[in-house]
Length: 210
Image 1: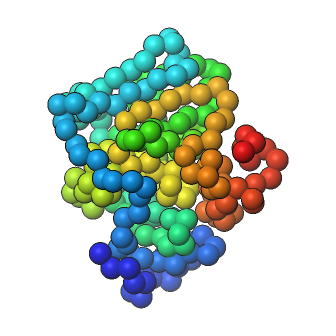
Image 2: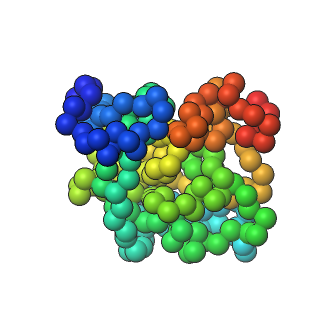
């Protein structure tokens, strides 16, 4: 895929750009570690932690495929200073997942877990924001392996490392805990409109101590 800047973008799309970003409609997928193999008969998605009934929830791939689907279009902002405007996604809304697996009233944050133990933390209200999706499709096609197949989290209002690829579990938490990149110098919140890229930019209240 092209690494170059897309010069055909409209002025409206440029206006939507967070500070420090440039538009790329196509980009080379970025991730840490190898691309995992998808084995449908072994795959599952779990919701665990501080659930309302203190139990855990599990969907096989066939069961997950029967959950209601939603189509969204959103911009994708990478901390590496590029943004992809108007990306079409299809998947299960985070709000629908939470309705099926209710959290305890004390839950304030979630940890989204991918393959190989990768995790990214989110405030519960960020996880439940409009447009947040557990995506199975992009651009009308099933996700490519390098884009997170069979399932990735899409959190369009935060930098892309919060949109965990190869999603396998959601953990409900009653206190914040840093994820993989947040422990390695990335900002705990990751708001692109405030350029919250790195932990040295954090102010009191932005996250737990490093």
